[in-house]
Length: 487
Ligand SMILES: NC(=O)C1=CN([C@@H]2O[C@H](COP(=O)(O)OP(=O)(O)OC[C@H]3O[C@@H](n4cnc5c(N)ncnc54)[C@H](O)[C@@H]3O)[C@@H](O)[C@H]2O)C=CC1
Ligand SMILES: CN(C=O)/C=C(\CC(=O)O)C(=O)O
Image (cartoon, rainbow, N blue to C red; front, side):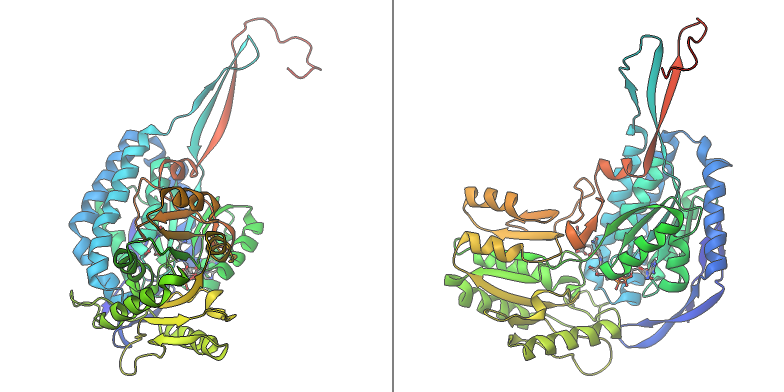
């Protein structure tokens, strides 16, 4: 059985406890994971705090930090296949996607390597003749990073990359479900030569590890990705240390198809948007809002594509849909589909878990026209698409915005002016027009409403890991005048 360790203060060590990790394709235990509790969390945060103020890290120039990041990027690219296999094994995400996604994760580190020495302060044109005033941009401090199990290397890269560029130190908490790829990634951090304590990587459970980390007195910022309910705990805990937070949460993203769209292309994008990653994507286009005149044709096309999907072993390159990451996911998705059908949603395809080994659930489509289906409101985080239709553009927009989430959205139309109106009208952090689930280190992503706040990716994300310090220098040699008047 494989055994993994934590990475704390530049050393690999066991946790205070350990727990078994399950291969979602078989339901069998395949690895032993370390479990961090309060004492390990404290050790990791103290290591990060020491590395922030003492030792080599704060003395490095920004260019030197960038060089370490370039080295890390090269190591991620060279080891993408190893990391991909571990992620697939521990989470069930298909190897076809993990190998491509992790190779691209290297580009995120490369992008932030280039940004490290482009984070500039400012000189202020101050309104006093005898003063020079400028702003220094300094690292925000020790950052706690908490990520969920899906795309852990991607979701941590969008935090670790900008935080390192800004000069922060950090404790990364891998999800308790499928932590293997992130714990293995620690070996690359070590090999890249980051000073001890700059990046610490642990795993453990939400209440005993995540919560202890988020409220630790030496943590200055919590960068969290996960569900809105957990985010509420994170924000409540931040009342203890008054840490700032950035929250990348879930979604119930609309996917709008107008009758003039290229329906074949839109159907492929819809498959990518809801069935890829077995629907376990924060940006999943889980609500299809389709123009009534093409609804039957479009849903028939989707059904045909959904039923042709190759479901199978995630380590097989030919597999298109693998298992869900956990039995909990499989049970929750099955229960929500059943509840939706009870509410009147009509099953087009799929609908019941696949019996046998592993946590499989088939691509599922629910026709929810004229039904108050819970599937239109609650996030499945699984391969379930809910369909409604519209007559007018205004109705399409109203349906799309009828959600408390606001992460992503998709619009399929050949009408340019309509596309522009929707770009403005959609209440979501991302609008994809005639495409879906495209990402880049250069393009920020993040949500509105229950999908959270803060943006990851892009230059601004690096600035978010800094805080400014205002420096006042008096340039006059005359004695300070009247000490009782503010200058
Ligand atoms: N917007 C985005 O970029 C993304 C959002 N997500 C969202 O994540 C969710 C699915 O992932 P799950 O692992 O089920 O989410 P989750 O919210 O249950 O767990 C996420 C992480 O939070 C930790 N955690 C749990 N309780 C905590 C507490 N009290 N304090 C601090 N940390 C705690 C967990 O151990 C885990 O590491 C979905 O809602 C999904 O939409 C997932 C991927 C990307
Ligand atoms: C974050 N993202 C897009 O902006 C997409 C992801 C990441 C995730 O959900 O883990 C994806 O679709 O896999």
